Length: 288
Ligand code: GLN
Image (cartoon, rainbow, N blue to C red; front, side, top):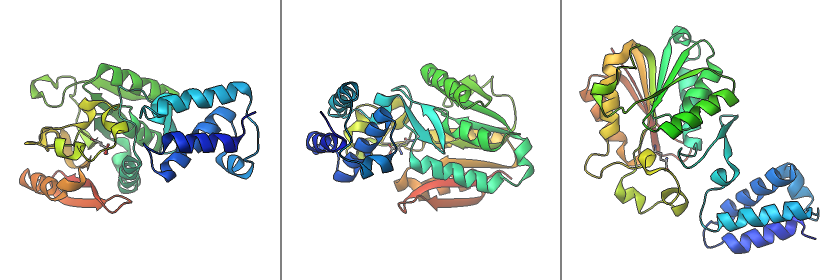
């Protein structure tokens, strides 16, 4: 019979070449709590608890996939973001904790304002995590979200249904200005976590990201890393109401460049903020 403790031992052995000890423990706990239905605290308190044969087979099957570097969120098919459940698959980036911090910032900024009755737009929505968590917490806004990928839009729509919110999803390429005919509204807030990883950054990244997550959601040309930011800022100048906000998640190495780009385009009240690891990670600007 396999116990909880046995699973910890076999996961630790099998994953030590891929993940560090903390990540391995977190992956093991999440896998076991998904499979057994026990909480993480219960799993830690009762390491001698036995798994059924079926549960033990499931932990082995997941371990085989983890050993290839496949992210656990794709294996399980879901993840949590801002307290909500999101379906994920390889057509969408796995929502990150840094992006939760961006959502938190936006909500603290706009929560009390009458912006709450305006329209908001999320560009490059992927799983829909930003648009859906904003709409969930600002129920009076009209929320729209665009993505260039139709399987991503499909996933985001499923996530809006799963979280019982209404978001207007639009398939559109933000880099193609001739093609924004569907986006006719003016918005009080535009937010984006666009691709921002350069080929140089790629060399530093874990292969569970580079080998498995969608490259269209991640990578930008080395010689034009702000390509999406510039296009979105131009779009925002046209489509934000005066006083409207533009929020970005950014590449930690491009904070100053992004601030300068926004200043150059005439945005005001620009603020650069760090994430929980102290890295430049998000920016807000206001349209005058
Ligand atoms: N923060 C993500 C990562 O490091 C990248 C997100 C993005 O490109 N927008 O994997």
